[in-house]
Amino acid sequence: KRKERLLTLVLVGLDNAGKTTMLCNLRGASTDNITPTWGFSSENLVEGKCKMDIYDLGGGKNIRKIWERYYAEVHGAVFVVDANDRDRIEEARDVLHDMLRDPHLSGKPILIFANKQDLPKAMTAPEVAQALGLHTLQNLRHNIFDCTAKTPQGGEVDQNLKRGIKWIIKAVE
Ligand code: GDP
Image (cartoon, rainbow, N blue to C red; front, top):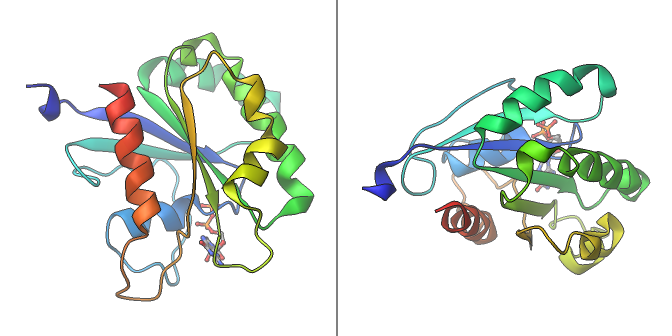
């Protein structure tokens, strides 16, 4: 059955975007005092079997060779943006476009999260879409959701986080 298939997604973005917090939230763990994890993977995420590996993007072209091998194996990518960090939105745009130039990702769905919506000056999802130049990605299956990865201890998982992950799981199938 297709639903039993293990999906491999990569969770990427600049450092500090909220990737680790997001994964902890999706797993139902506390988002307080978490430490960033490299290559963490998780099963039964949201629905079905879904494995996610986290990587910070940036860091220059020296790691490009690793990506080529890695992207070939994933079914899709989740790109997290700190919507409150206007100073780094251009850097985020550059690494996103750089990543999407990789032929190993072509035809694969890309989910973008405009994270940290709890902060009053955060850019909305349409603003982030504009700043990232998503309109130039016409040939790509992509979608953007705003979300708040950080929730109080014992709090509910952000519904938009779930919606986004459900979208990409469906897009992969
Ligand atoms: P990573 O480097 O992408 O893994 O980012 P982290 O998950 O380590 O988060 C970086 C910082 O942003 C931490 O201090 C988090 O508590 C904070 N953070 C993550 N998500 C949110 C959010 O939705 N809202 C707020 N206000 N802070 C967040």
